[in-house]
Length: 374
Image (cartoon, rainbow, N blue to C red):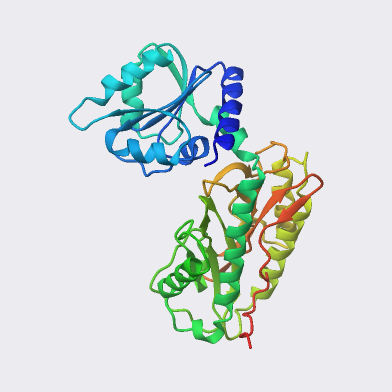
């Protein structure tokens, strides 16, 4: 990551730490660490922290990761410990150097208990809070580099959505798992870095379970199939949902449900603009479905923020009065779920602009398959 981007983000964190009356931010391998340093890794059993204080940023890392961190992050201060040493001794030393013995330390919200316990034991006089106190607001507003990655991820999802829908009758007879594998392969072939989450392929009654992933059920003629998937570009997640009938006649009532969900999604997207509360976008979608008699079948929030994490702030929910601001990116995904029958969900990502919003997804939202390309 470019040093100027890291320097700018660290400076904004330091200002936020001062406002929060906190001495330091402590990240472990997570989207927060990547956002602030450019270094990305999976959490492991070894102690690996990024400390950010009002004057310094420093890594505490296992020796085997030191060279990689120096190569991938512009942060120069990398202090290592080796296998066979007690990492808490190095932790205590860096804490002394950075003045962390007292005051408030804001730790990564998803930090493993193993590491938070060691931090508490090493700094018994410190108070602890969550990193989201300072990072949630900063990460919500995406810069142009982040938006370009999200646009590319959305474009790949669009291309794969259209290609999969051209399968038409060829998708009938496939299992959900087989179609999910097809989607994964196509996302990579289009340039994505794998999947942003395990794809959802919910056929027939399985589509009535919002977080059904995929199983061994065979797709039948007339089945509504919920297709929810995305890929990753430069660490940023895509997320799109369409509900398709690949072949045959859909069940009674399906077309009315799909029309209602599409109208709800359109109303919610139309409601997005700076200064509008997130709950008002949720209300716009929910009102349409309530008016059409499906209000009790819309069982989740209307959307969630998307960025380095698939689910992050802002949450487009009935209880969130946070005002939308330019640069915020989130999903708009109302759904209706009829138990033991079928489900319908339609989802796009949008970014708040200065005077409204930009849809990041543009593939057809109809329920019919697409014709084969000539």
